[in-house]
Length: 134
Image 1: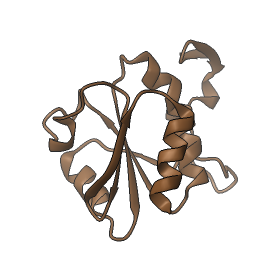
Image 2: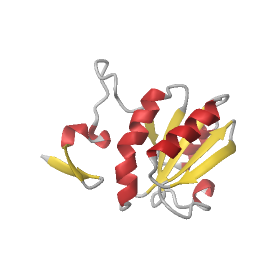
Image 3: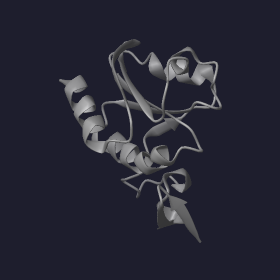
Image 4: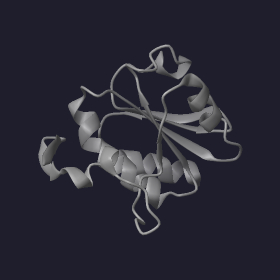
C-alpha cells in the first residue's frame, strides 16, 4: 500500500507516522507529536535544551513535504527536543496564536523564543537549528 506524501508516492512503511520504534531502528522518529497543551508545555519547558517546534496542519501540502526532513533533523540534532503541533488540534495554544502560515518553526531555549521561520525550506530550517545550537 502506498501513501502520498508531499506529492510523492512512498511505501507506507517509510512514512514517519507509521514508524514503529524498535531497538534496531536507529532512524526512528524523535519527534513528539503532542495532543494536549499540558504535554506541549512540559516539553517546551525542558531545562537547558533547545526546543524546536513544527507548527503544521494535516491539510498543508508543504507541511507534508517537510515532515520527513524534520524527522531526519530530529535524529541529526539529538540534543534538541523536537515537537510537532497540529494547529487545528491545539488551536487555543498561545504559541499557535501568532502562526500566520504553515509550516512555521519556532526554536525555544528555556521557554524563551530564539527564532522562528515559516515555509518548507530545508536549508533555512537546518541553518536556524545549527545557529541556535551555537
